[in-house]
Length: 331
Image 1: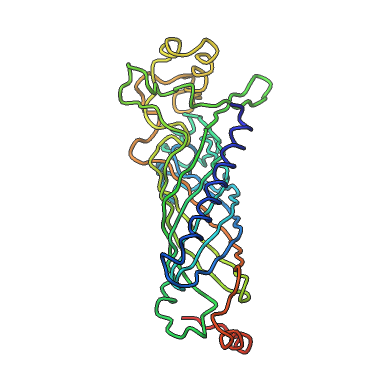
Image 2: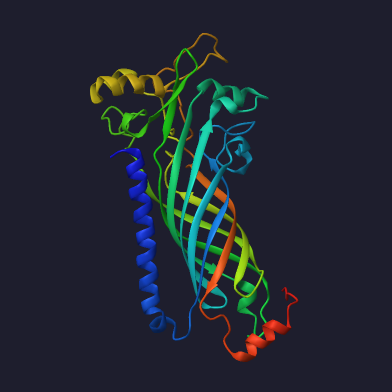
């Protein structure tokens, strides 16, 4: 399947899943909660960040915020629908798309740890499509006993489960300086699935993640609200950047790949430049290529705009009170 077609199919599947879920929830809401459920739809956008083996910041490479490389800040955008069976919690369904990237060559050098990664000289990029369901919890609303006067500023926490799709590419630069990108998954650069490397298992391009985080929501009006939200994704893979374990013997590529694929795998698996060891061009088989202790992950900091659907007020008194009381109540 062509890349653009695969992306279109994935996006369509996510939106279809979202629509079916909405219909199912809407049909059963009265049975589940025995009261009127409020709905909200909206859009979100903001920066996203990758934490993995490639790229990073000064010092020894890690997979936490210390190793955040702002050079590769990307834009995440998406849409969501949330139902609120109670004022203090909601169920969100969302779909997002973003772009992740890392490059060893961009690391700022101040010590030997960075030089090892710069000498490795690997890079990657990938589009990420995700869909997830999550529970939102508003602690201040749980203790709000006055149903007629509600705070406009509402902090919240959230957690859920999702699915995401990625497909990493790596680059080769020709003598004229032109850069070309190639999909890495089919090249099995670390011997995935080869009997010579039983520790290196094939990885799936569509996987489960666990999104969790929190934010703060502010109601500009009774129908429109803005939120600032931090959302971290716990993943169960170390191959978003296609780097995890060790360099393999490149002669094995010719055993399991076509001639053209074996040639690409040979070039893309090891692009070492002689910084610590001048003149070196490749690492010996068995040398550490990535960090197996930590998996890859990504997170976002987005601004959300939400719109309430349907009737907003529980009673005519609540409607009159909202119009007369415009000062925000904050807990």
